[in-house]
Image (cartoon, rainbow, N blue to C red):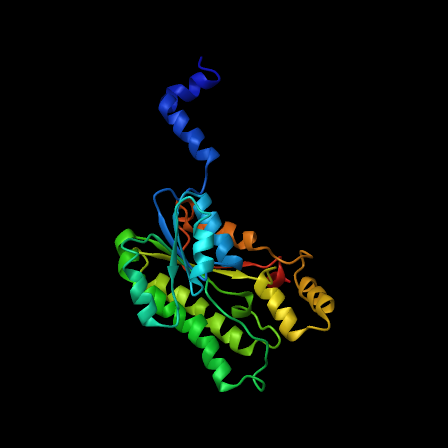
Amino acid sequence: MLVGNGWVDFVVGRAGVDEMSSDMEQPYRLDGKVALVTGGASGIGAAIARELARAGAEVLVADLDLEAAQGLAGELPLGRAVQMDVTEAASIGAALDQIPTLDILVNNAGISMAADLASTSEEEFERLMRVNVHGVYLVTRALLPQLLMSHGCIVNIGSVAGIVGVKKRFAYSASKGAVVAMTRQIAVDYPKEIRCNCVAPGTVQTPYLEGYLEKYHKHEKDKARAEMIARQPSGRLGTPEDIASLVRFLCSREASFINGAVLPVDGGWTAA
């Protein structure tokens, strides 16, 4: 009778055991993959860039701020900086020369504002749409040939504001709702060629959040922060790493059957 490792050796052989053990120790690997993260020089984008690099991917940190992108790329084992304005087709086109192949696209670049419908000017609405919606369209369309060639994957960074109503987020919610719709549409149009999913964060502790508090709640930051925490049942703000971990999973082979999904990472906000 075979016992212990003898049974395993009989079934899969020693090489198989070693390979199985290695896979179990290193899940969600992205070795040999090339990834591009827009808005990748700070906040959630920077955490995603670091996490994909930790998984073994070559990471292109794409950002309007080239100096910041270069600083982060220099920290990564296989990092490269790419200057990119997601709202300008010419800027994206110029970056294409540095991106001959691509396996992973993370559309992270975005902006926000706090205003209801009556307080949102046409110019502000257009600006939010230009960055958050038109930017995703321009970047994804430009890189579509590379992604089709590699049978790659796209992860769009949306928001819970694209799933549920959030007070005084009229333009932002509209733009993130469009990101959700584009995610599903790409998954439907290219179901066997590309996987496209959307991560929808709740309120995350980032430099952007601090800037928001300074702009809109300068004299009541503690109160505003407490209200943000209270709307997430877990009792805390999210971290950029919370988002980055899910992005890594969605880009891995373990997530190969996930397509067209919109996944909240919000401490239970949208479930409550």
